[in-house]
Image (cartoon, rainbow over all chains, first blue to last red; front, top):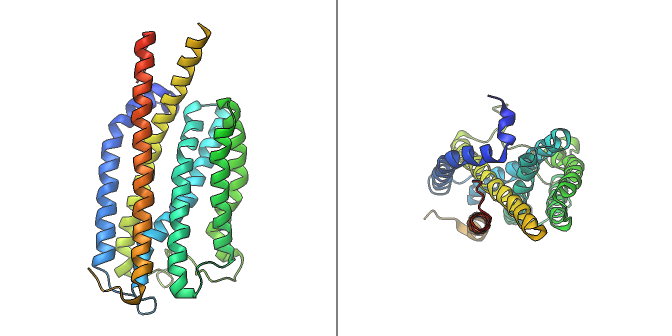
Length: 242
Length: 52
């Protein structure tokens, strides 16, 4: 069976219906276990005190904010190259989820930054590129709403997605590109010395799994809605013309 | 409840804002999904077509 069979809306709806309850249950389980473990059963950091508990929300949300845009980039490219409608609708469905993740990363970052850096905000490379990514998300969602013809909207938003990918990559690697600013490097690293301590690392991994599963669940759910909205539009148009 | 000390506002504010935003996102996604499914069923029933 070919992967591209899932580009058939009917096939997508059928397959996702079976997956959704499992994904929703798993994401709820991972988020509950990860957050309770991190909040109640991990010690304070010797430098950051209890603010280290923000890591269980801030890092997964920031990772998903970037990865959501990368997922939108891939599905947008599939739309541009192969013209599969489900692909364009999946990108559209992911937009508000990615924006919410970006908002969570920015808000928790500001709340964490104030006691640690003495400021809610700094025009630091990573923070600035993240803010621009949030604006790209807003522009992407607005563009989908502004263009009436769905295929034209998919074309234009796909191009916007390609342009915005620069900032998605920048927000991930800004700390490495410009060795300045307040934000520290990656919290998760293959280098054991750079990585956070195991006591924070394991609940953080569970929270990341929870955020990834929540993202997948919401994108599937919202793509199903977009497919139905598209069909509803087509049926109503047919009704008007009859 | 762990003792959050002087950072209680930052920590609890972060958890509160995250729960609020995620709950709103899940709620809106479910609500729109149910609404769209119902609207499509009505139109399909009216036109005598079915989909999923």
